[in-house]
Every structure is written in C-alpha cells, then in structure tokens.
Image 1: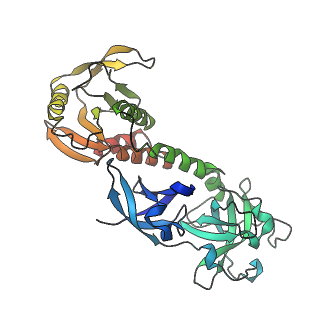
Image 2: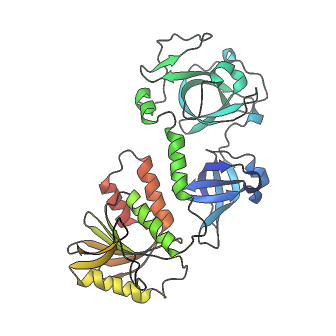
Image 3: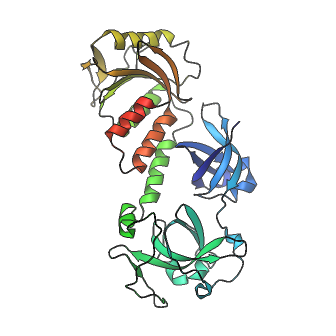
Length: 372
C-alpha cells in the first residue's frame, strides 16, 4: 500500500492504552503504542512521519509501519553543556511553545515551533524563563549548533506583543527597546501573536480532535444521522433539514441547500450499501429531477414534526450517501451526481474552515460541490 506522510496531532500516554493520532491531508489515522514500541518513544506532537494506512473492521484506518521524518532534536541529542554566551548565531527567530514537559527538574524540556521547524529548549539553559513559558507562549530565541549538526534554542526571551519588543530578565544583554528580527514570513510579529493567542493553537487542536475522535462503534444508525446533521451545521450550512424518522425506511435522512447547490443525503453504516440502496437512490434522483419543489416531513428543534416545502428549481443538485468509507462518485443521472461521501471528508472541510482565516461561504460552496 502507498505510504502517506503526516503530522502527529495528538499523543496520549495512558499506561495500558497509549495511542496517538496522525493527521494527513485533513484525515486522522490512529496509532497505538503496541504497534511499534521503539517508534513510540521517538514521536511527539508535531513529529512528521510516513506511514501506511491499514483498514479496520469499522471502515476507518489506522497507521502502521511508521517512520520518523525530519526528526526534531531530542533531549538525548543534547549531551554537551550549553551557555547562551557561547552562541555565535546573531539572528533571532520568533516561535511559539508547542510542547512543554511536566518535569520541573533540571531535565525539563520544551519544543519551540518556528517556520515549521522544531527546536529543543532545556530548562537548565535558563531556570528563570522556564517558569514563565507554557504551551502557546510567543518567544524569540537564538540557535545553538549541536555536534550532530542540528540546532537547539538558547537565550529565550518573551515577546511583549503590545510594542513588539523583547521582555528582558536582569541578565539580558539586549536593550529593552531593541526589536527582534522576525522570519520573513511574518511582516508583523504583533499581528502574528494577536492572531494566535497564548492558548489558541492548543485549544484549536483539542477542538478539532474532539470532533475527529468519533466513537469507533456507533450505538445505532440514529447516532450517526444526528452527528452527521450536527457536523453539516458546524460547517456553516444554515438551510438544512433533518427528516422525520417515522416510517423512514427507504427514505432520505436530510436535505440542505447552500447558494445554488442542493443535496439530498442518506446516512448508512453499511459497507456494501450500493445494491441494497439502488432503488432508494433512483427514488432520490427522480424527486430531484422531476419536481420544482419538495414537500418533506422534517424534525423541528423542539423534537416535533412538521411539513416543509422546499423550492429546488434551477439548482445544481447531488445525492449523497454519507458513510464511514471513502469518498467517490457512484453514478450520474440527468446531470445529478450520486456520491458516496466519507464522514472524514466532511471533517477535513471542518478542519480547513477552522484553520483558514479567509474561509468564506463561497469556498465552502466550492468545497462541497467538488468534494471527491
């Protein structure tokens, strides 16, 4: 199977159930410590890896045959005594604390992310600054070359984003009014820090993981329908209806419209659904193709039911079968495409929406129409 590359987004040491999640192209793959004890000790949040996706019985995938790429400096790499004054690197970089160990002894360490690279910082380099940093803290620092050809971070300084100046401790040799030299990608350190508040990155990662980490085994079809409906609303689809479950067999689960695009969707937990649902799909196609409006029995917010009439003339239409499998086009009839839509593809759009500051309704419309 073709290898993929991804980033470790979450890692949990839970004694008997250690596991991590690898993000690749917006999709999460689970990885358990028992798969590879040796690689487990080397990976951390932010590690870049290659892996093979392995299908699970529930239709999802886990990550196996993991290899570490662009390995960040590990604590064991740093075996020489370092003094910030020994560093001859003049250029200061800007970064954000992405990981901090809970070890408050001299062996405590942290990783700073700057320009998509990670740099190790050990507590013993600066005992005073250690107590002032946490995950999400913006800092400036200098690079120190190690014997193995890698770099660690030294001379850590906190960034005061109000006037973009370096906040000094008493032993600093830099003037308080001196501005740092930021990477070229950031035209304004102040804007960058304001855009990523102290705990923003960590909070956003936890939020996305909470949505990604859906239960491996759903209680029943109703759970999957309700979670799908909630996810579509989270994407920013406002004109959406969930159909009544009374006498629902053979009927769709919901309908939504955004702009000039309309979708009738059906959720299923079955893997081999196509032949079983062929008559239903034909029914969905006929409704969308032959009518200018639909009258549907929907569930209201208070749980009651009512009829709703929806205009569908002059709209681009699709039929979605939402599954835990893969996204693919199944057929097309009179210009109406029928697609299998993986729940993971919708989660990818959700992740992109949260991570992109200029994500708007036009982009959402395009992503939904062209999803494949």
